[in-house]
Image (cartoon, rainbow, N blue to C red):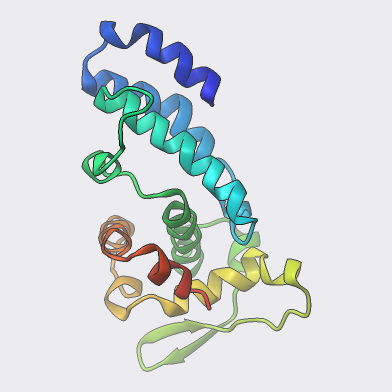
Length: 180
């Protein structure tokens, strides 16, 4: 990803900010998002390395140089930090599974119980740390920890909008407490 960012720096004067954002989204951010559910529970230093790549991409899009401070660039670009992106993708896949929008093999990972009209996901018991990092464990746990106004969204677009707004408002420590 750094190689891609370096190459894009060489041609950034040829592109507008919107064009650069589109290119960075397709070439860098998509790589960060690829299988990012697997990043849940990995060592902090690995997540920090991914965050450095995302910060570099934000600097590229906003026209800053290597040693400039990122500041509010991620927020201005409407990009969640890496830890929050991971939580967003897990929650989104869980929402899709509950509402029949995910493949059957993912839907079959979840068991439901209803409290009134609100579906709650049953969290399977896991004995190992690796089991507790699995999607079948963390998906229900994370989904159940979200506020009801998010989980009961009638459409996927509204769910994404509410979830992203909610995650933007959370601090990093609050984000990590979602799944504890």
